Image (cartoon, rainbow, N blue to C red):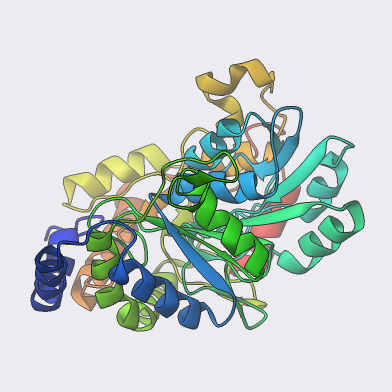
Length: 395
């Protein structure tokens, strides 16, 4: 059996008629930028999130960049962010001229460690960017409390968490801004690049709309410096077709995740679901001491597994000038040596999921490997990360 990591072609085929009609409607209209399809999608996404305003933009990186610009973040400022994220999060911060300052993660949830966050706040800190990684919202209540105490702005990176909840609130509606990516593989994806910024402030919304369109308040009147970052009409029309199905897709993702967990919890470290939230499993990520061998074994059996992400941002060559050393973020460095992402997309069948489970189990049954004894690569013996992960994963 072949089990791909994702299958965008199958996704398109399932909704082909509606998508083709939406694209043709847009082409026939002759209106391709900042038109009725974008307005329609923005209003629909506002209703989906439950409150506030939405401004569509070109991609998820620009979404973070625009939100930071709206917060007047720039040179000389520090932005607190995790290193365990896709590098585009960091790119957006650097685009403003500000410096990223890295915060360690909770080794069980993969989201920002609030205790470490508090220790990293300085006089030059201007904003916090919590990343809702893999489909789970960060621990936002204490993050917002710290931000209020220190007068900081909070920009939620929701690229992987559309539809996720934290204490009943949608990802992207808790901080000053929520930023979304509609990259094709996301929980809702365009057929190309796309993004959006949400905010509960009308003033922020009006500024975002200027910033994404050269700083114009009206055509040829530029009230502020801006950029060109607009969600085009065709992508907006495609997203409008898909938005009503996001809840159904996220439910299926959770069904797949729970099937994986039931089958693998005694073999590998399975994901921890924060009881304060609703995890939407953009990715299903396990931990094992035998990561590379497992991936190779799965590939031989036709199962595609990936790593998100093998090298944390503070250890990337591009950010060597920040002078982080190994051991700077111990929990981050610990998990990035162990994580594996298994296939996850709504069109996966139960038979495919069961085959992945069977394949992972077969790896441990046919090889003499130690069953996931957790030993930190930094400090030999039992670690706080081991305790945290085991206590919350049922392993």
